[in-house]
Amino acid sequence: MTRINDVPNSEEPLYYYPGCLSLNMYPGIAYSTLKVLEMLGYKVFLGEEICCSLTFKNVGLMPPETVYSINAFIMSKTYLKSRFIVTSCNGCYSNLNDTLKKLEDEGFRRLIDELNMTIPQGIKIIHVAEVIYKQIEEIARIGERNLKGLRVAVHYGCDYTYAHPDLVIDSVEYPRFLDDFIERFGGEPIEYDEKQTCCGQPAIKGVGDITMELAKRKILSINSVDTDILLVMCPACLLAFDRVQYSLISLGEINRVIPVIHVSQLAGLILGLNFKDLGLDLHLVKEFNRFHGLR
Image (tube, rainbow, N blue to C red):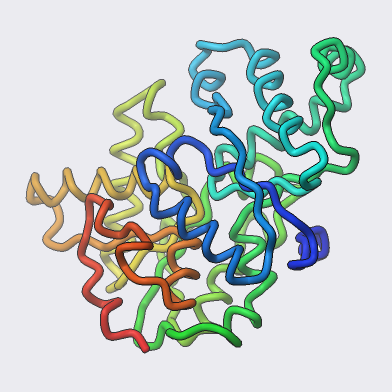
């Protein structure tokens, strides 16, 4: 876990880039992320929202150079504020890191200079899950709840583990850092057969049927091992699992639903935030009864 040393301590200010889904579909993720970072002592800057445009790149509606230019503009907004951009979305994390590598290209760098964008030297893109993991002992020190009695399945997500394997703070094939987080607070991380497979959400615009099939396969696998909650790092993954369970229960293909929660929301829960602040009532699957008895 050598890259965990790249994740800043609370002395460093952070520039939070929530992404579209964290703001518009699941605003509880954006709020939880801000509150958790502030409770951990970070000074957080929040800029204007500009879509990273990953979906448009993936389906061919925008050329990659246009998308990279948009992301370079997002990075330029951090100038004089922070050299760390933290995001709560795997897709934004991947896209911003793609752009960071693209900036090593001399021709693209000239374009950015011509557009008068100033990007901080040594800028780094980090995921809020990495910050939460780095601050695990501080969360334990100031936290008000634990996870005792909860069986938790973890989904890490492709755009974090596979898009930039050189940046992952853990094993790419078998990451464990969120499982370790669950154990630290008394929960039981659950192994399941489809743990390393995709949620299907990246295919939603390109090959829509695959989204349902992949998410269904994951949910059936998780359902088979008596899980209380599903923990994710990405609002797009949350959306996929939220939607597919809503559909499957309506079709009678499953007889129970598993609540899905983002890592920022779970950290916020441990730190004492209330359910309304966490935005759990805005999820499609709302069966969060197991959380009410946590102490």
